[in-house]
Image (cartoon, rainbow, N blue to C red; front, top):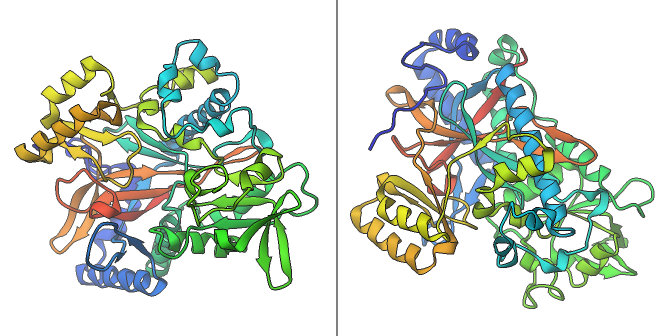
Length: 472
């Protein structure tokens, strides 16, 4: 089944779109052989830099080079302004929602979100009830996945409020493009993204605990070198000029978290953690965790450390909660959502489950806590047996799934051996929240490199592009 898709560079109806006009003029002057050479150069740069990701559950080499395409995805300044208004509104609502469900729970009392959806949710942490993070910020770093289906229609695909990844690819994509095509950036005014690490450090410093005196000490907590996103953890720590630490490097001393240094233990004020909630503190969560810091939750509850993102924010990642985001946005902002949701069937509801089972070959089915493209079914691309097998899983545990229509995601050209060819894309802009909201102009464009595929995740064969927001 092929869906007619809007091509962001060259729509069939209107011809070349204005944001691509300067790039198109440059492209027509290029020798195809030179572009192929540049693709190979880009691969060498990525290999030399060590930009890899891990693929779990496979016997062969677990580290893979993330595929990169040299044709940029270009967004006009006007389009970006509209997107940022919608993203900012959504992020404000997400933080208000998290504060509410861990305190007064007004949205539950108002019946706008079912109480059982929170109470029975594995991402909801009762340990966070009554705890207010420093500066009242729960989601310090958010990745909002956005898809486009026409000239003017943008939708939020999902919210990544726990530990959004991929920002290192955004930064390396831009650096690689500037290295390969410096003349392009002289011809076309593209808004910068390379100051993200500085913005991240400033944003984290702004949410330090009230008890912090002087310049706060910031560190990045990683599960270790075997984690799929370890490259990014090390990259961001290095770019921010802060320490990369593991749980074994930290301990609680005199009511504060401290890291081991050559000169003894030094207090940490802000911890950008890339460790899941359940592994964060073996005294509060999983007692078998060797990745966390015993007693860190006591320090956190006392207000003596900022943990970014706050424990318990995973409830805002939940795909069943996502289906209520229009109500959540309106409840906390008093306005209709600027960016819409994709229609979603909650399989926990009998009528929805019946519809989904009857139309499984037409829908995309996702796990409510799934990520990375794992545990999902793309009905139109699945075999009859795959649909039958998935139906059994769905019927056995319906509350674990949601379903969405198969949208005609917009396409952008990629460079292939035969020239330019359209491929489906999505966009993950990165949002920093402190005393203000900052949205980096661009984000990570993920692209489904297989012809006709709608799955853009790198773990499922997808790649990335540099995203240009024009300074117009």
